[in-house]
Image (cartoon, rainbow, N blue to C red; front, side, top):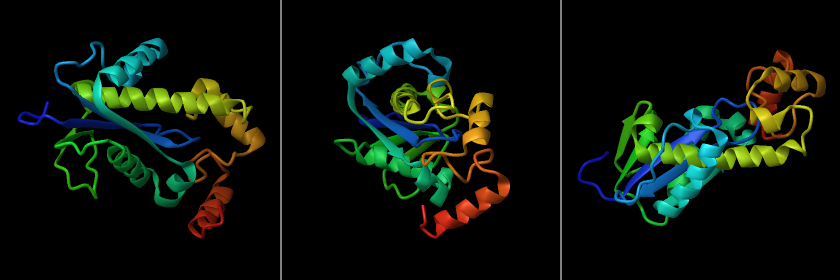
Length: 204
């Protein structure tokens, strides 16, 4: 809680460690008298719990926004900077500027709004936890929808993370256009470095 403020935006990201697809950030502003019960770190919740809570959060929130940054941008500017950019985009998507931002573990440069960095904030702040849930649900839906387009990587189950079946698919089929080519395990080491240099030159 950020005492003395009314419009408090919680912000969090999901997909930072995935090998496939975008990183996603959510921003949520609550009416402090209408916060849904059961909000927690999205990783601790079941799929059904997240889906139910996401619907409740959308109904109860004064404002919310979700933003994606693509794998090609992640490869170009690195995952930390891409995560911050997704957070900035989510904040810009809010209809009204918040008075303060509560962020899970990161300081977002390029933002003039006061910020408070909270370690493990998705479990300690209702607004950060809600942002985590919205981002997780939206990103999972996106990756599940892409699974049929890119078979062989078990994306519907792993949501782009580096499970054994995903890594086996990469060895057998190679990366898709939505894989993060600069991430370890996506390309053979020499090919990964070459592709990364081509990305820097704008060839991807």
